[in-house]
Length: 180
Image (tube, rainbow, N blue to C red; front, side, top):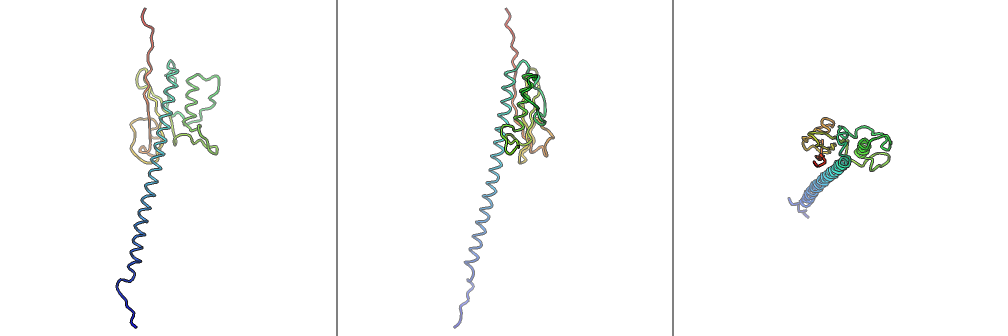
């Protein structure tokens, strides 16, 4: 008996290998997409946390608008703020101390590590015009996107393209008594 040997032998195996290769590339693409989505979600979460922080300080300053100039500072939250319950602190000093603690992530602690805020966050409050205050929070993002125009945290991170900043402008009204 003569065995029949045709050029078609092994074609099914090659087709199966090619199909597995296509599926593998599809799975790798899906994993990459999932990783990028996770990073984007974290970036969005950090931005919302920063917006909450700038609005918190704006409200604190509105409540103490007569002493608003006492809030001006840069790199707030980069050093240990100390004891915020000290009775000798003024309202502005207490507000700045509490804000610095919040910027450092003291709102949520895991295993002794503060994890309740953005990565390497810092606050800045400037006085660009009379009775006008720019309240900013800067932090280190995860992926490069472009350097922000705001100077808060400038040159404090590994790359200016990973620095993120959110700001709010607060105008303090000049309240005067009407002329009699």
